[in-house]
Length: 193
Image (cartoon, rainbow, N blue to C red; front, top):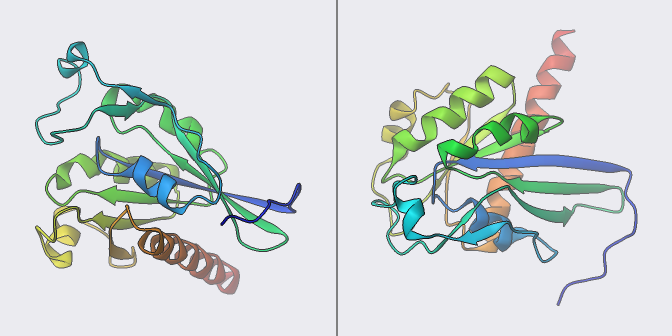
């Protein structure tokens, strides 16, 4: 049972979920949003197989072509707006726009295809956007957290968590970790001034 949403809030906080093709970004937004998410999923066609490499995402029948949008009310004054970015290289031009005004980002990683996450991390670092990494383990762990951290060459200060994007509580934990990480970064900036 979902409660009625307030008509207004004082603070809209934007979070973006990025990562490679088929890592579970749409699934995460759907699992945690308190509203029925806006989704730009379109049916994948045979013609698209020549453009998008589907060998590692067998059974995928649809794909995001713009972005997904969800909402989470934190309290009477604060709302999280959650945007799921498309993962295919041909849609990466949208990411710069999605990063504008972003509080922070989640880089969702499929540990079977770690290299698909390099571009997202490079892009976030170039933008100076705070982020965490969440390993979406579809069929159980493929690599240890340390192996993932080394493969992505992550700064030790960047949190890395394990999740199942299909589960609401797991996705909530990812978002809580991101908000705590961003809050600690801002606290460090305030104390250094």
